[in-house]
Length: 186
Image (cartoon, rainbow, N blue to C red; front, side, top):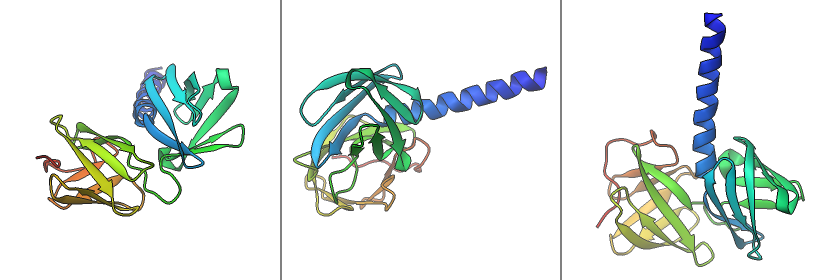
């Protein structure tokens, strides 16, 4: 009996942790046919979707890798480590427009959250570091970022889950993925 309860608790907490990290990591700008869409995860039962036409709908997670949006009568499967959503109506939302790197959304410097918001069809962005300081930047290519006010560049890993900044710092998609270095700041 004790082994069963222990196993249940381990599986419950593991799935809860996976669900939490996956669910909230989806918030931000997405793209469908190179047009911006948006996802705002409030909690696993209240996820706001805005499609490329500006139509809004509320959906929910059925598990960490599947979403249901009743108003639009669609379900979505989260693929590529959270970088695309394959919808049941045969459309796909991606984290980046065609040929551009996905950098939108929550990042971490160590265990402290940071944020990147992409605009101007994926070529401009703003960052907010773990201290709340904001700076604007531009994508020089699909893997190279530049922040003029700080004079630093960022190189996005091939899997899109890490940014190595030229000042020796790193941002990652997961809280424990970087070391004790500080993030880009003015």
